[in-house]
Image (tube, rainbow, N blue to C red; front, top):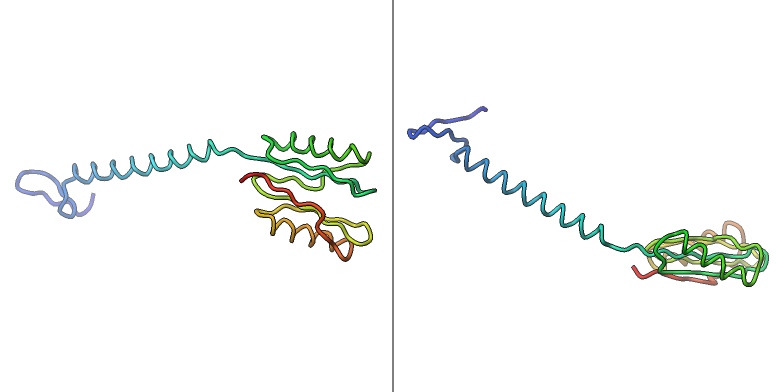
Length: 147
C-alpha cells in the first residue's frame, strides 16, 4: 500500500485511521449495501404480476377480455373464450402485464390495439395504431389489471 505511516505503537495507519479501523468500516459499509440489495430484491421477488388480454373478431368486431390473471397464457385463453361466444375468428389484439390495454375501431372496420402503463396511455396508443389502418378511430374497450 502507498502512504502508510508507522506510529510509535507500531500500528500502520492510512490517513489517520488504523488499518483495522478502515477494514471494520469497509466491512460495515459492505454489509449494509448487501443487506439493502437483498431487501430490495426480496421485496420485488414477492411482487405479483397481473396479466390481462383483449381478443377481437376482425369480421364483426366482437371482443372478449380478461384481467388480473397469474400468467399471460391464462389471460389470453379467457379473452379468446369470451370473444368466441360471439364470433369464430377471434384473435388476441393485445396483452398486458401490470398495465392497461385498449382497442380502437375505425369508421371503415379497421382497428388497432396497444397497451400502456395507465388507461390514458393505452387509449392513446390504440387510437394511434388504429389510425395506421383506418380513420375516425374511437376507443371501444379499455381494461386494466390491478398494478
